[in-house]
Length: 80
Length: 268
Ligand SMILES: [Zn+2]
View: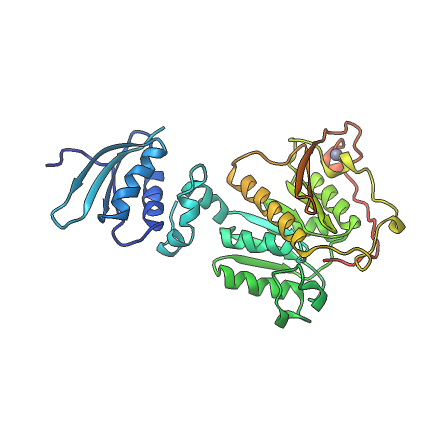
């Protein structure tokens, strides 16, 4: 179950590294501090790297959940 | 801040770069840079700025491509010999990144046209890629007058130097070099060899300064002269201070009178 309310959504299942993180970063850039971005991604490289890359830049990874279709959804809170 | 899917992919390595990001890329795409001289320095500068996605690139050069240029002027190819350099430059930039708006000026910079060239598209930053003192002093004086930032550079043999001028942020080129050396003290191009990669190193450093200025990141070479010596691979910086009696930047900008030191050294 997901009870997190996101402020924006981006699907990065249609692109490959490094455009995955780039597309997510552009979506994040449109948000304000403290807002939450919901990112749909594939397993493997995006799942391993995208949440971690946001964390390294100071954002907060709130939750990562597996979807029924095998993709994953991460909720990331924008840092100040 | 909107990027097309193609832009997202093309600029992904910038967009994911910490401290550059979507904001930095967005600024580059909306920036305008004027490159004076499409030769050894202007070639790598133009190519990297085009690849980086600087939205508008103006190129000033009067000359045609010669075979002896190709050893260092990497924007021009063997098939470009005899073409005007601005045309060859425009073609190369178009191949690297068709998104770039290229503005060409087939002119030699002089007292009459320098201010019009800089104000034509209200360029954000100017790159001095010329190879003669007359043009270098003219570019400095015009940029101070019009309150435009620019990066100076010069190369000879295995050596190069550069500095960046930003209005109100430090000295200008005239603060260090009051006036050009007498013409007979300056070796002509044919007398002065240059290792081709020297132009590549220094022109690429100029592009780095332009990108940092446009994106608003890092520390610029304001108040510092960087000296590169390729033979012993030495980079060093010399602190330079604003000369309070500088004949150019101590004046009220609008009252600066440009001087023509036209010598007959070749360009490029
Ligand atoms: Zn000065």
